[in-house]
Structure formats: C-alpha cells, structure tokens
Image (cartoon, rainbow over all chains, first blue to last red; front, side, top):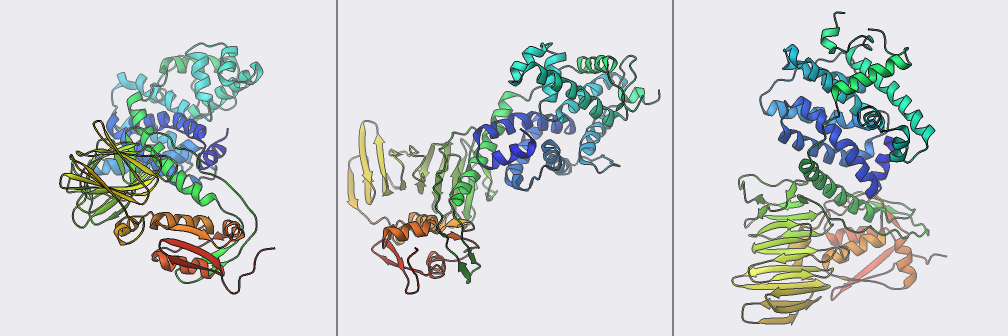
Amino acid sequence: MNDLALARRVIAGDEAAFDEFFTTYFPRLYRFALARLGGNEDAAEEIVQQVLIHAIDRLHTYRGEAALLTWLCTFCRRDIGRWLEREGRSREVSLSDDRLELRAALDLLAALQVDDPHATLQRRELSEIVQATLDHLPGQYGDVLEWKYLQELSVDEIAQRLGVGYKAAESMLTRARAAFRQGFSIVVGGWPDASPVRSPRSSEGS
Amino acid sequence: MNDGLSSSGGEDEDLTVRLLRLAGPRPPAPDARAARVRGAVHGHWLARGRRREIRRRTMTAVLVSAAALLVVMASRERRGERPSGAVDAAAVVAVVERIEGSPHRAIDGTRTLARDESIRAGEWIETDAGGRVALRFSTGTTVRLDHGSRARVLSPAAAELSSGAVYVDTGGTSGHFEVRTPVATAHDIGTQFEVRLIGSALRLRVRSGIVELRQGARLVSGRGGTEVTFTAADAITRSMAPYGPEWDWVASLAPPLEIEGLALAVFLERIASEQGWQLRYADAALGDEARSITLHGSVSGLQTRQALDIALTTSSLQYRLENGELTVFRGPRARKPM
C-alpha cells in the first residue's frame, strides 16, 4: 500500500491501517528522534507521541507529495527543536538543500557530527547513517535488506514473509538495493569506493 | 567516490552487504515505550474517528449556516453507515474534551488542564467550585466531572470517584463502564447516568439504560428515569425526569456541536440525547426526510434552542417541546417529498 492510500485508510478508521501506520513509523521516528536527543529515551518517547498525535489530527492534509516518513519528520524536527530550546540546548543544523528527503537525511548526519569528535566513534556514525538510510527507504525495502543480508533469509523465505511470489521478492530486493545505494549516496555525498568501507568523514578526503 | 547512481551489479551488492553488516540491525524501539505511545495515539485516533463517523452519516443536500443564516437543501438519497465498535487502549485512556474554569491534575495542582490533553491511567483529576471538565475515553465514552469533584481515570472502562459527581455517557455503543466510589460501584449497561457522592451516600441518577450498584453482595439496579440514593443501610429509588435544569451542568460540558456534513436526523438525535429528550417525528416519512438532509456551516456559540430554531426553520420544519418530548413536524411551506 502506498503512503497516501495508507493515510486515507487511517483517516477512514481502518484498524489494520492504523496498526500498519504505527508499526511502520513509530520505530523509525523513535530512532530519528533518539539520534537528535543525545540518546534521551524519555524525551524521544514524549516527542514521538506528540508527533504522532499531531499527525493523526493533520493526516487529512497529507497529499502524498513527499514520503509519509518525511512528512512526519517535519513535525518531529519541529518538536525536537522546541524541546532542545526548552532544555537550553543549541540547535546546530545547517541545511543547504530544501528538499525534504535530503533535509531529513542531512539532519541526521548533522546531528551525528555535533558531539562526536572521536575517530573511534566513526564506525558508530556510519552504522547510524546506514540504519537511518534504511529507515528512510520506501515501504519495506529496509526490512527486505535486513532479512536478506543480516538475517540471511532466502528469497523464498522473504517472498513468504511478504506474501508475494519469488520473482516479486527478487525484484523488490533489487529495487531495495538500488534505493539504498541512492539514499546512502545522498547522505554521504556519493557511493563509497568498493575498497574497505570507511566512515563518511574519513572517506571525504579520499 | 563515484556518483553512486550509475554503477550496479555484484560490486554494489557486495558493498551494500558490507555496509549493512557493519551497521548491524536497526535497534528496535523498546516494547514498553512502543506500547505506551501506541495506547496514547490509538486512543486519540479512536476519539477522532468516533466524531468523524458520526458526521459521516450524511446525504447530499446543503444547509449553509453561520450564526444566523442557514440555507437548507434536501436530497432524498438515503444512507445508513454505523459507527464501528470500541477498542481498548493502553496507558493513555482519555483526552480532555471540554473544560470550564480550571480543572487540574491532582499530582501537579498548579497546572490547569488543557483541551485535547491526554490523561493516563491512574491520574487524578480535580475540579474546584468553578471548574468542570469533560473527558473522552478511547472507547468513545464521555465522562464529565461537576464542580468540586475528584476522580481518577483507571482504564478505558473504569473511573474512580472520591468526591463530587460524574456523569457518564457511553454513547449507547460501548457500555460496561464502571464508576467506583467508597460507597458502591456503578456498572452501566449502555447508558447515561450521574453518580454523585453526598456525605456517606451515593446518589445515582439514570437518564437512559440500566445501571447496577454493587457493594459487596448487595446489588441495586436503576433504570432510565430513576434516582437511587444508596447508603450503607438502604437504597431508596424514586422516579425523576431525565431532562430539566438538574441536568444543565451535563449539557454545559457537551462536546461542541459540529454540524458540517451532519444529517439533520443525527443533529436532532444528538441534541435530544444531550438534553434527555425523546425525539419523535410527526410521521415516518419525515424521519426519512430528516436523514436525507445534510447540514453545512456552524452553530458554534448558539444555545441549544437557537441551534434547533435555525436548523429546523431553514429546513421548513418546526418542532414542539413538551414534557421532555421533542416532536418535529412540517412547517406550513414544507411539502412532502415525492
């Protein structure tokens, strides 16, 4: 189901759609918020809750022009900013591109760089960027990639989970890889060379 | 680095795999946090959905209104959607729907509750001599606290009253809501009722449906149109009207009447339900016609009678209110639909 169709079904009171909406977006927003709140889980919970409640109220204004996650992230970013101001913390997010999806990705990158001067943390940064990229992929692309390459499920098993045929699952895997490559390239400014994977900061000079 | 968009094949797949394995799986959000947030959001979604579904029972036609000017057009199309059933919620079980004065949470008594604020299970709500508050539970049930009341939200189906009075309206769909008090527990069976603590007595007023009062092995039932005064020693039941000035405080906390897109019949049913009136149509065809008339505009800020006057007059209908019975009939210029 595409984002707009999902939103419309949630508005229509479809319980299954609400479940899909929540299970799809709560974890992603939670991670999105947590990365910007210095790991403050209470604040992330509070903010994501108010974001989702606000989103429910405004869902009728969602037109499907941006991904639903991007739309939700605009509320999340605003509420995080308010929380940081209330807590007396500074906001240091500089954006040069107004495209919402790129902004979401760059925000994450900026947030990661604020308090992280140590090279030993670069691997964690890279992990967070990879995971954030997975979160921002459309539909179940992120899940499919994790199932295939981390859980090492076969294409058959993935097809079963998705309730689709083998060919469709294989095709989704291909599209998921392409989407990941494109999303990750946007965040770090290009696709890394095939040589050993390094964090984006250490690879910038290469 | 290359531009990342033109390359493909096994090399890219290999790099994708290495990146993913380096990063590891995305950490799941903690279950307890997910459950709490889901409860809050779900409760809010249900409350909105319930209001929306009531509005959705509409036909084609137009009635444009502001405070004083409404235009009505009728269509003869019929429709019959029904609201869906209730679902339970988790930690957040209610939202503040309406307030008067300065109701507040007992835990931080200095902070006034705000409209749409979430109320979690276990929270005590207090009203002073000038305050009242209406809560909308995730099941759709509304619970209204009168002046000088103290109540705790326990779950989507229960509240505890330690002083003052609450009014419960289960909307006829949820049912099985209970109000626990030090004197007895009131269990409803799809109804509207008020529970008031007066000294060591509990006074139950049932507007519609049936309510059971339980205290240990004792069980006393109250039906619509009765008042039960329940003490440790006995229970006295008497008749009482489900309408009139004794229910005014309840009506003052009724949810705002949003008529945009609402069928005239639903508008009349809601007003009758809030006022404790019996709704009657002069003939069956008129009832059908009222279901085919859709209202547009707003009656915000109007008294109940003013809203009725405007909606019915501009629909070329009239009404009569006698002994708690609201009778709708055709006005002199109204013609029966073909």
